[in-house]
Amino acid sequence: MYLAIEGVIGVGKTTLARLLQPAFEADLLLEVFEENPFLSDFYADRARYAFQTQIFFLLSRYHQQQVAVPQTLSQGNLIADYTFEKDALFAGINLKGDELNMYYRVHEALAEKIPLPDLVVYLRASTETLMQRIALRDRSYERQIERDYIDELNCAYDSFFNDHHHRMPVLTIDTNPLNFVTQPDHLKQVENRIKQALKLSPFQPELPLNPDS
Image (tube, rainbow, N blue to C red; front, side):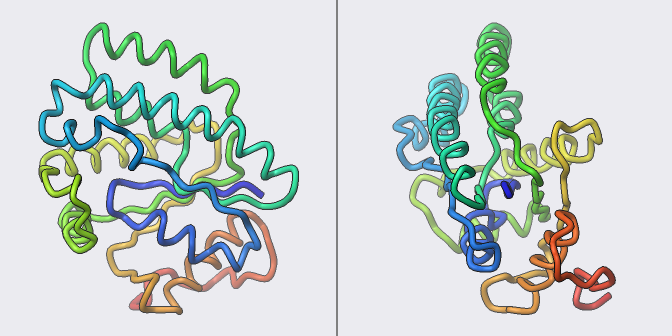
């Protein structure tokens, strides 16, 4: 089983991946974004550093997934806190003109060699919720992130995952009312939804996601 968790910056992808690991007896594949030497400069000056930032992420994610995904799946289950497809989504916002066209050509060639997840869990949250979560974790290179940028990403993610022509199944979960860390029942509800989507037993088909519903 190959499960990937997606969503905008700050939504809780890595946290959920770690929390789900025991239930699915899976290895983790975590995005290594701290190694990008352009990231801090990008948040300070997006126009100037966008291309360098995107190309570094593209090649880094490609090398990581090309090796780690087939190797891990040959031995057991895998949960990743990102998909290879997300890189092109960011590029569509951050790049323009010839740079964007060049990026798309490289991404298309590399994507053909990357295994697809059995299920993508798309974690949704309002822009206000995302900004609060980003502020709470207080990463130094994220302190300059503008609300408009997060809002733009949020719209792009919604548009992308609302498109039903995906190469892989997508399960959308609204995380606004949820707290995986402090509320074990919230985590159990998400775990149940994932098992149901993957047709893994046991699961409760009628279990509601929203505790107030």
